[in-house]
Image (tube, rainbow, N blue to C red; front, side, top):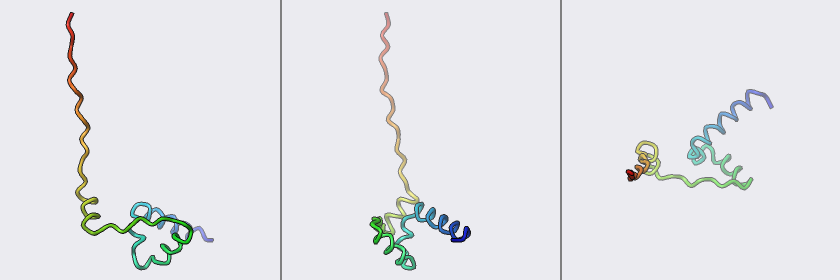
Length: 74
């Protein structure tokens, strides 16, 4: 296999890892079917609203504040 083709394949796999939603593109039905035949589990397609909410409106997780310590004076 030519190096150029391998490079393109690596770039495609990197893109799919970063955005598994690509596997639900109709033009990639053949690839999704191939993966399933090999035993892969394809993540379910997200709804448009859920995907939009996760992409742009991530909630920040706030670290819990430490409890105040008592100081004993002798």
